[in-house]
Length: 245
Image (tube, rainbow, N blue to C red; front, side, top):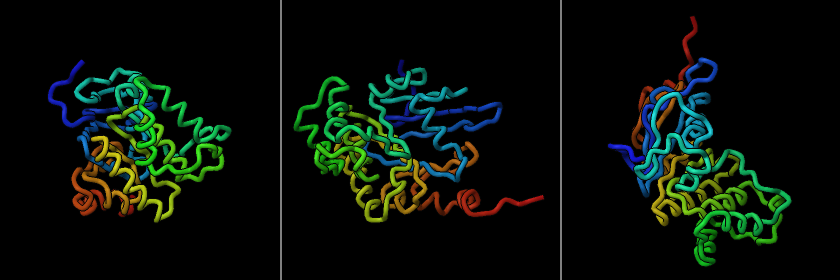
């Protein structure tokens, strides 16, 4: 089913969810365009990961709609959203330690029809900067190479949107600089929309076209990284101590 008045390749509006009667998200709306990187930031407990769980289909919201390429996916299961082009990474880059990099990549390549050609698969690895031997056990890969391998595997599904949950976690500065280039290249090469949760504000300042800030489950600012980081409400959420009675 299509949704009228959708914005961008992917988005949501009016999202609400509660756990045990406690509201976690309230009337959250965002959207991302093709060729766009959008940052999602906020202090701990703001609801960022919960929003990702709603968007990918693991949590069922109490209110709101989600769309992908004009189609209402609010009631689609996780695997159906993946087939339609929604791809996600997690904070911890978990891969099967006992398998080789080649075995994991081949499993990803042949898990989703139509299969990519060998050239397209190799090009995806190149764009993800994964250059380790295919015979390398995944347990021997460092954090950054695991992230690169997982990105290369996601590209085998020909995604339309990437949801990246703290992709810079565990990386050093030089690796973060390389990650900037990888994400931007993937977004430009494949006309993707990308939404990334990130606490490293320097990464967002370097790569994000727009940034949405959550605090206590609500959107408090939207704009360019410079605009939102200069917003007094964002400063209050991040840096000011709450007043005590």
